[in-house]
Length: 347
Image (cartoon, rainbow, N blue to C red; front, side):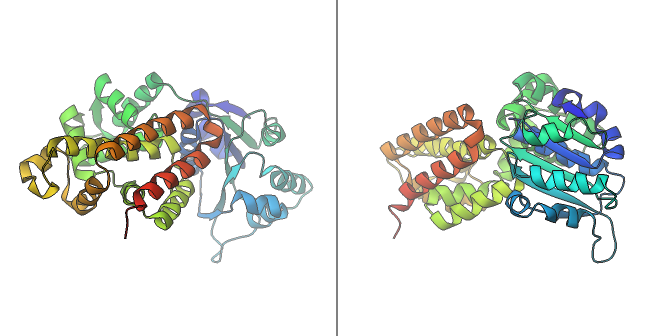
């Protein structure tokens, strides 16, 4: 079975009930990952998640079949989750299907999220005509479609969003539906909204949760990069890759902090950071949880150095958008370089 992002929602539940192998691909890595998580939630009994990296599948193609046909320690259900690059899973999936066709026994569901792969890849061709497999291709989203998706997310959790509010969430998330879903969920919690008791979501509400959360998901990475903590940056980038977040969305968090540092620098003029009063800090979006880190970053990024940082982030953003297949590598290189510049003044 072959699906696209447009018809996935309508056919996903039926696929989850009848298929065993799911291959998610396309340039919209965020959409593919979100859809993969949706499929797991729709499985009749997903059970335990067993994660197998793509490199392991490539090195040992038989491992997938062994894991998919074994049971957990307590005999419970399980599903296999694998994030791969390109056709890393091709031989493993081919072995799994061939042995299954020869009577090797029932296998648990296998979900593969393939970066840098399309519906023209060898793996997609292997699966697309099988009734027990799904190939789902996700194209890069546009602002209009993500805005509509955000409004749908809001309806599902009881938050009524008009077009302008939904568009702001979509833009702030870098068109990453996972980040957008996180924002809508936080908004619903903030408003104490539910499908049974819906509440309107406004621009003021977005401002409130933005100030209160202070980029929770990215804070450690942002702080490590702008403080010049090279080893920690490497660990944080690895964590973001494992979670599967969109590189552009990750970079946006760093860009927002750089913009905040520029606003603080302009407000300070010739003053010191310590001269800011509580009212000024509130207006500049300085939340107490990260005040120490922000104060250090203000000292580290001032004047021409801050201007060069802003220019480099703009260039890096453009590189990610024009080279989506290499975006994770470009992000790692770019943020490591920025951290190296920041760390040059550390003692």
